[in-house]
Every structure is written in C-alpha cells, then in structure tokens.
Amino acid sequence: MLTIKCKNCEMILESHPTKTRSCQCKNFTNIRGTNISAKNLSLVEIIYNPLEKKLPLLNKQDMEFQEKRKQRKIRKLNFEER
Ligand SMILES: [Zn+2]
Image (tube, rainbow, N blue to C red; front, top):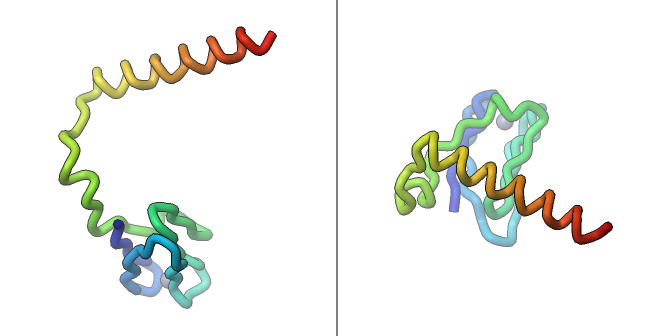
C-alpha cells in the first residue's frame, strides 16, 4: 500500500485497498488502493511505496526492453484481430 502527501494542504493519506482516502483541499487528492488521482498530480508526493523496496530497480536498458516487449505484444494482438 502507498502513503502519499498532498503538497497543497500537507495532508498525509494512507491508501486502503477498498476505501478511498481523500484530502479536503481544492486539489482533491485521493487514493484508493494504488490508484492516485488529483486535480494536479504534481502536487501529490509519494512518501512510501513498499513495492519499490521489494523490487530491484530496473535499469534504463531493462525498462526499454520491457517497453519494446509491450509494444510487440500490442502489434501482435492487432494483427490477430484482422
Ligand atoms: Zn490537499
């Protein structure tokens, strides 16, 4: 689960799997599970993300490889539809 902070009103929101947590300011920062939404996402700071601690950070090459693999998959699916 995530912990986020609304930089606009300084409210700390801890995510809950089924309940939506939201701050009270005009930025409407809210979080439900791992879905974060806000009027202005740049005003939302992720304080704690346990997933980032468990998974080793992918280097840039790995990221590009993952992206390419995703794109290939999409193209293949499109092809099969036709
Ligand atoms: Zn706020």
